[in-house]
Length: 260
Image 1 (cartoon, rainbow, N blue to C red):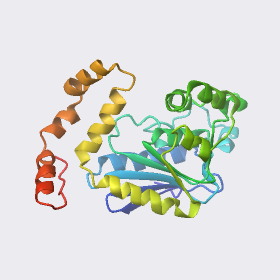
Image 2: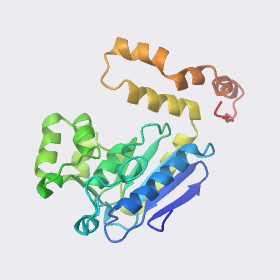
Image 3: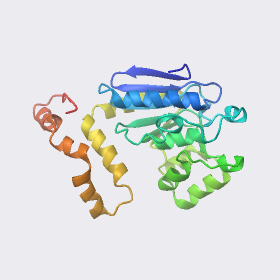
Image 4: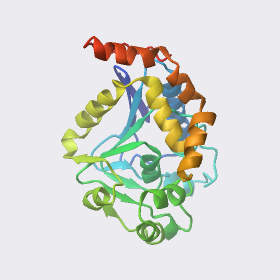
């Protein structure tokens, strides 16, 4: 791990902070460090939810480090496990990730936010993908995920022109879940993560895995896939936690999840 990625534990929540002033741009070395952080999160049974944010107040992340590119880092460089920023291609992560967008989410920074499950943004945040204006495309998920999250015409406009989307418009289209003043962002993001961490780990894993695996399927096919092809769903149904939840409810106490 390098100083460019800071990890802090808050109970069952892991806070991952991208720390590369001034713009929190991501080069290959930083991407590898972020990938290590997300893999460690995935493999640690004591952690349930991750929050990823950027240091400072202006940039969540400016995306790919263009200075590194100018010095010879290839656009198709090895960005490590999980792909660019450690999360955009981390397909087996079955724990929730919240992006706390503290400023500009540009290019790969926006793609990092899109790879999260939930987004809370500071009121001054902006989202944009300038790659087409630089002779490339946002191929770390932007060109694939954004049309799934926005109306096609809106997504194509952003992809082709690089125009910026402010928080009000992002809320209107459901691109983000919540917004707040910048000074409240981290506190609210961590509180939200702690709330989610109260849910059963296997339930969270099942929700994430099923929604990802059945996206775009016809409903009948999605039901069949859920019942027959999602091992974590079956594990959840027959788990100790599935018995503990109703028992704790009946006894009016907080459930003690075991993740099994």
